[in-house]
Each structure stands twice: as structure tokens, then as C-alpha cells.
Image 1 (cartoon, rainbow, N blue to C red):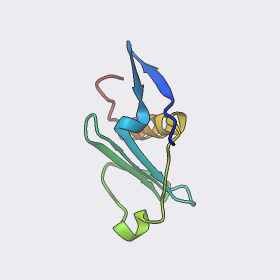
Image 2 (spheres, helix red, strand yellow):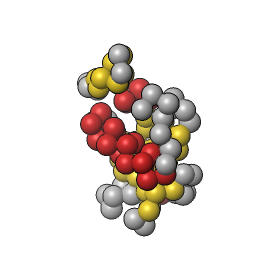
Image 3 (cartoon, one colour):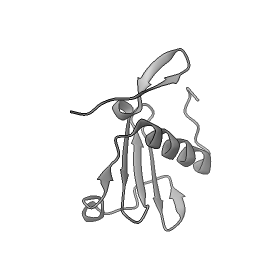
Image 4 (tube, rainbow, N blue to C red):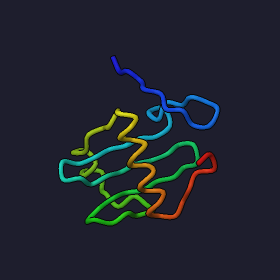
Length: 89
């Protein structure tokens, strides 16, 4: 059973897991997708990219991250690095 931790965003409570897919490799590479505004970012070779840069076979080795605070941190870092803030931010 998956437990959802809620984060306060504005006047509403939202589970990050419901909106954001975060996957990480053992080497720290990241793929994330925010369904609220279709934001997609990947972290590879020490750099953020605003598009998918991994092949399907690479993503098969990534772990799905279910921790809301880790999801929020990665999402915030990606948006800041790429200069793409969400409308609710």
C-alpha cells in the first residue's frame, strides 16, 4: 500500500505523487514529468534538459520515487535550472 504525504500549496493540499512522475537512476540521473502543465525535464551528465534524453531501455533501470519531499525538491530544482516556473508557484 502506498502512503501519500500531502504538501500545502497555496490554499489547497495536493499530493505530488498524483501530479508528478519522478524516476531516478542509481547514478543520480533523473527523469520527471509534471502532468499539471506537461513539464518534462531530465538530469543527465550533470545538466538539466527540457526534453526526454533517455532511451526506453535506460528508463527501465530507473526507480520510481514516491516520496513527496524528494519529488518536490527535484521538481523545484529542475524548474529553477530551466527557468520554467509553474503557474501555481
